[in-house]
Length: 312
Image (tube, rainbow, N blue to C red; front, side, top):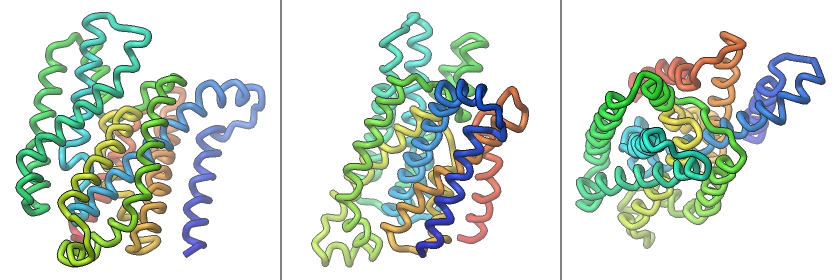
């Protein structure tokens, strides 16, 4: 088991080195590019990989559905809608400077609205996990319609900006903005260990969890809020990126098995590896230009998603 973790860490370190150097050996150029451009981008990618993969892990654990993630229950689309709404508001009213740090607030508000809808229509009624997912798909479609409406109301330049955001890409690497996102991520990571034991018990089934003294409904709602926080951080960092939270938990399960704590760590490592690899490809495949990160992740994630559907 230790060898498998070391292998994951080794792959991640190798990708980090490639990402920072991009096979260049020119020390002077690297001394300029790494601290000013590549390192902030890398930190953004790694943080987003952790946030999105853990959000997917939590949601799959709660719903007991291997095809669930923050995107399928509407949280990602809600956070995206909130962020895009502020993007349009800021552009319309020419908001600059400190106003840019309102993005996290609007993303969280959008995610909270999505969660409020899914709670009202499904969770409060203690319905099955399948109904929760179906409700989430409907909520996702609702927010996508709002986003499309917003796109149609702006000029061509803003339309392109929103399209890039929704496809998933790194667009903000300012130190203060990243610090806010890192703080939100650290809050989530600090709270998560308190739910390890409860998640292990929930994995045994709801009936067994009740016997062992777990308040199933209350615990699940708390975990949904935690997943909401992680998903919101992921959206703030890389926009409406799909598939990472879906496939990372499965890769981790194939490597380390079903034990929740081990799988959670392996899931975070897998999420970082997926996004770091995608970032390397997106920057080098048409250098000096770059592809949106979401396009590369989609090329990786879509075939694996089809494989999962066939397997399930």
